[in-house]
Length: 536
Image (cartoon, rainbow, N blue to C red; front, side):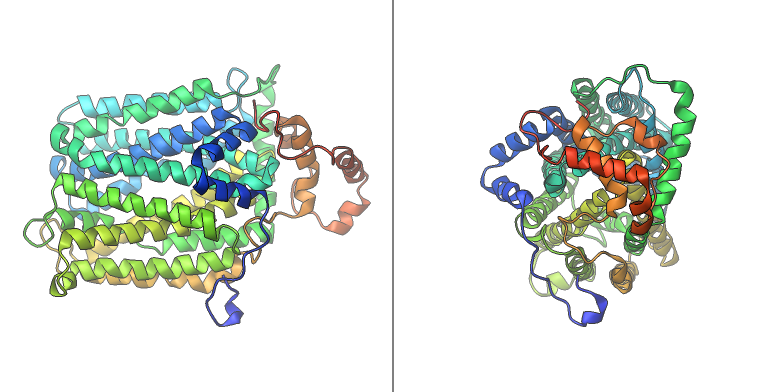
């Protein structure tokens, strides 16, 4: 349903970008020739992986989230007729499945179904999404709780699909390090283009079909996810011992705990959680104000969709700007400016709510489109580096689970920000008809976005093309992944998967044997021209 200078430097500026490698070449070709860029990614990562990304990020999260957010807003407002603070709370409840993403990650990492690790979970996500949205659409007079359960089930299907494709992205980030940022850019492009299409038609769909009918159309993106699962090329796991699943779960949890103990991992995790938690979400109140014809702007369904569609163009521009100019800057620099710009962009909402735009002669509809475009662009610039950072923190063998854990931390922060925002709206008495204190909520939200800057020292100083995990956690598993073309289940029962000191590793005979194996495969290229390096 999102990724600086050191604190002691005393000034805010972008550092010089790191030396570019394969990722920069592909990044430039992304803008110069998108088709050639996609063909190159398809040849190196397999076309079915690209198809899965487009289905999940483009159709399900792009088009689906765009249509769903507008339709759900009108559904809670006009069909269920709840207050803005209640709608904000219900939105947080429907997002709850995204907080338990590690559970879906554990399943896709350690529990194959019919011999496949990823395909069955795409199929499951599609079935859950299709059935829940059809039920919500066809059942008239649905109560609040059944409707909430249906929307939560649809969100769960989207979360399962998301964690499954994220597992593939993290897995490929390990075996193809230079392509990590390009894979995130592919996800961002797909999501932004899908959102642009979805928001463009969302208002028209709500106006012509009603909010329930528009929500029923969300079954189509879920059906595409199901199709992607059927077509995904993946190695078949033969003779899997399901009696050992509980041991694999235990070992995966052990490995995650050991990885989280590493300072290189837990420090940026704290920053990511606090950053999202303190960015208060008051979109429920803003939506009610947008559609109020007396006090607010009184925008129609079609114009609400148009505003969000223009905002998606800003999101797409953010992806292009990141891919062409910012993806080689250090994490601290890009996240610092992302946080500052996020607070400044939020001030545009304050201008709109206080109607200062009318005093300077700018109409509401024009200013709202500018506001949403800039906010979406800045949000994308802030989100993409965090996604790259998460993919760099994943340990081999549990990449799906651990990436899901990192994303769930961010989603928990977003969930809490929605609840804090709902509480703030309630405390300021912002209701369906009363918006006099909405400007105070906007101001508090913008100020709160600057507070995480005090924790920027927790973010790694390195550039976005670097490997962040200690070499001891990667070298043996990465060599095996390169040789086999995928990360096998055997890594989950490996005992030594935590942060090991270099001196201890140097004395470990098993590690010496692994080092010898790595030397044997040094000549094998990380980017294979003949086939994918995923489960195929």
